[in-house]
Length: 287
Length: 301
Image (cartoon, rainbow over all chains, first blue to last red; front, side, top):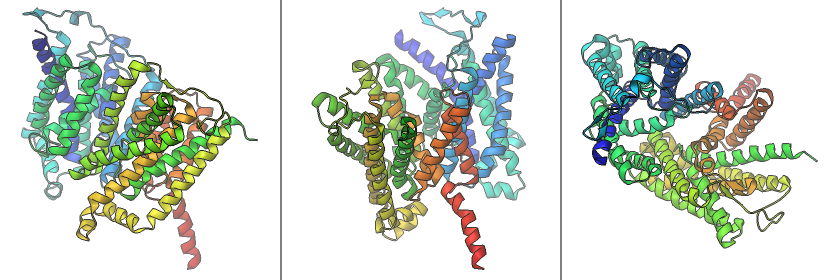
């Protein structure tokens, strides 16, 4: 029963990871930039949802629209002002830049909202039905369903619409995309914005069951890196599958090992995959 | 007689200049950016301190042993990373992962025996125990360490080894085609850098006399180590010193004028990092040289 419970919660967590990781992998696939600030942006999304609920009593699921659009705007702004000047810079400079961005965002949040973990209690979500001895946490199920649905919408957008095809074209061949008249500047801003919106919505989705504090992003960003690397950098479908695998592995492992070691396992997977299978389980760079 | 406050500030400037210079050997000259130098730093601090507390080993000897432990860790992590061709951001992130793994392991280990941090027993002023009541002594020690590492960088930069490192940094394939064993020379840079960083860890332990796992192995110290080198100018002899002066003075000024809160330093550092990467990717030192060169050019024509 313990294992079944672990499998369920692992699967549900995997859904959230997929939305976080898909944003990260989209940014990487299109711009070849590893966004170290991804976790901090998720934290921002969580605070947007938290404050809307606390100040105006906005339902957390209605607030997803806000956290998604705010983070989209923040993403477009960051891309235009900070990231675009370093697009041609060495890769480690780009990583340092996003590190700088995350330092500013995290510590600004610390300044504005203090370090205390904050939680949101939504009455109608408190019910946790038991099915066959397994507790089903409703906010986690909702988070899972919405995450997968959004990932699917994004997938269809990238596959079917002209804009989506332009984004994929850029990720596959920059020069080629430029030749056929695709506006690169717009695509970069859009990709970065969408990536940030994904993680913003993911932040909003976890607020009903996960306490928010300025450093909360660090927990998710490592997982997201593991997922993205495991799925193959820039590989959209790979990220989705890898997210579910990581979610399951993590919560099953948690049954057998102490909680502090859970993260060690995560880092170990990360290192092992990067060293021995850097292209990931499903091959890299196919957005 | 300068006040203890001024001495402390000077010690911190020299300390971060020293750590930045140690990082610079691997990051600046050999071009391998590590985001996880906290691993070596913490290992050095804990090696000398645990040996001192449990076996009465003088921290000076512990410092050397900590340095060796750093070398072993550096060779191990370097072997894995370089053997499997990790570069650029991937190398940086793997080093970060190594440091984080060590942090979690030490946290689990230390929280059992020392839940409130590891205190170093105070023995008063004793050269053998690397403990002084007067901060001035620490100032001279870190000054000597900084001069030694700066001299080493100066010599290395002009040596064959230094030339190989820079060739690897600028174009690894081309360097290999010319017959440079990139793997071996990157490992060498890693070993030297890890050794020096671990020595810095022991200095930190003896200066602050208490060890907190999250402070010694945390991401924050990894960032602070590389920051002075990056801000000042990676791959230059005096860059780390310039960067450390700028960052420490900036953080003092903001601490005095802005209502301080924990994390403010990091926010300022993040802002400076962003500005430097965008506007002065070669670092402050290069930025200072630029107008000087322009003037020299104008005078010569």
